Length: 340
Image (cartoon, rainbow, N blue to C red; front, side, top):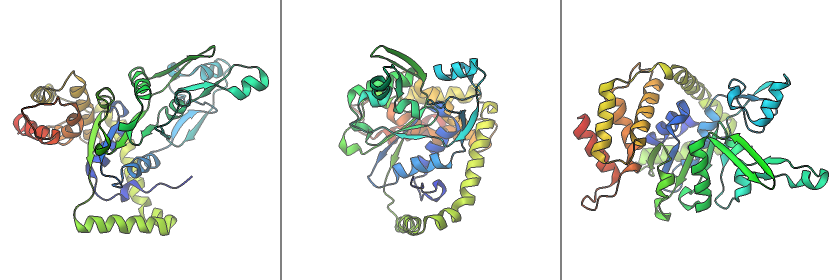
């Protein structure tokens, strides 16, 4: 398995890195969509974050990454193990599962294990990509080119947190909660609105346009490829420090408060932008709280709202034929009006 580029060593792309860190602190934020230039480090950042995160505890032998500390969410196999008193736990790396654009539905949701069916005459379920991604990341490169039937499938699973498979006489239900991360190039088409709304945060990724940054990107990438072990050793302390910060933020998150006045300003901001539904307010609140926790703040402030609002709201705006300004400009304008 190829070693991932260190997250701490990524030059620039501050909005994307912050969004991914927020999703790592609080997965309920709803995932990250990174749209922008090719070759700007989108997929590098996703894989770097997964390598950075602390290992997670799963039930030994579980094909669905069940958490031994939450028996209420066990799959059917772990419930059977628990009833026999045969549960053991192991530490594994947080999974990052690629969802290929041409994947079949069987590969995504799982299907009948044909080998066992033919060899032994048994009906057995072979888990798909959604099972592997549980409690990790499901990564879709070129998400705007994903086929409609897979988009519909993802919407159902994202809403319920479970994957239900009923086919060939099988009826299987297993947990499937993951951080959905999508990347793409806007020149190749837009994302379906239903899927776009499912991403908690949307960030714009651009190629660095200042000479020092471009030189530093090339220098670090070249050093990583020429002597990977030496490069990783140089950045190891930075990675450990950031990993500890994420772990501390997760532990602190339930204690971070958000005042009624701050909630009111978040709602006013969404109303000023005319966002549909209440998902905008919920995402803005969760993301701001995760940001506050990451920065060791006890309560959410207007500054946290101001910094995370563009990522939380820019992809939720209705088209306004009387305003040809881009979504980021409209969000910045509303922030200035509501938050000052």
